[in-house]
Image (cartoon, rainbow, N blue to C red; front, side, top):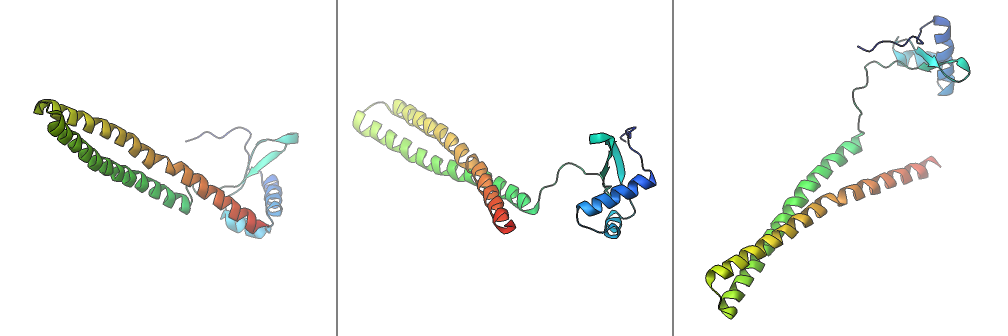
Length: 167
């Protein structure tokens, strides 16, 4: 449990003044403010400017971590699905291409250069490994780079719509 600071108090007169001030500040009546607080008193904590206490509303449950809005939760799930899906799609695509390129290299080596089969096989394996290394880098880029760009675009769209609707 957290210890209460010494500057917090719940005297009835300052609470009523603070509740009236909060209600007036937010355009609500004092009656509605009391209904919203469900009998939970307002805390007056810590000196602020000019030595006055600051009124803090009392919530029913303590805040645990931070909460995401519904669209943020959906976007988080979609971001994870995109990263996984784009990774596997790109890896499979590069696997298929690496296989074709390495087979062509092997055929070219065997038919035209007349090297030993073991040398041609080693060339094919090297080509495949190089192509797959490039594929893993491409998969990481295709899976992860669009996510922050999409989040920024959604945030900008959200702010623009809020700005337009507020005016």
